[in-house]
Image 1 (tube, rainbow, N blue to C red):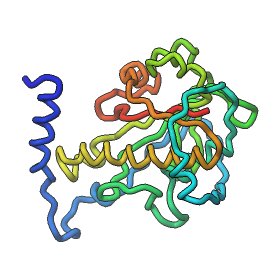
Image 2 (cartoon, rainbow, N blue to C red):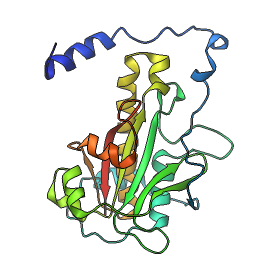
Image 3 (cartoon, rainbow, N blue to C red):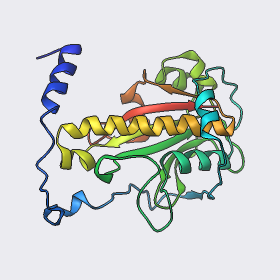
Length: 240
């Protein structure tokens, strides 16, 4: 069995030719290829998020964008979280399903779990899930991880001083059912699109942001209560 970089090279070569069998006539597509799926937690409490207006010069935030790690653990506001999610991964306009980022075939396989470490009255510390369809937060666990957990999950000791993480997971079947193995590439590319959006919106809000690749996925997945197979961690970003 190929190991390390050999496995990566093999997957890349195989996935070059695996694009799924997609009829040119969209009328012949199965319903799952055209149905937008939303993950939700209907029995859990919710925190409503108000739509925000973001006015910024793109050239300014592109030139200033960077990874900042000198976190202070200051409290992040509900309005800031709403703006981050709305402009990074939310639905583009009312009465439509398209979002603010590209997605292969508009399959939208990604889910978003804000973990607030430094809370306040309007947004207490805890684990949340971004309800994209309703632009709200599902309250999954009203308590924050310990600082030791944070440093362990995100590898670096400075991670414990962040105010919030946004953990991005993928529900792989949404994309792979249509595009085959090639769909896995598309999912990771999409996570990159959203990550850049989060960076740029953070800069516009005066927030510090850094992406973390060295996550301990299995430990985070247990905290999120996902199986790590049908839905798994693909990316994480820290904010302050």
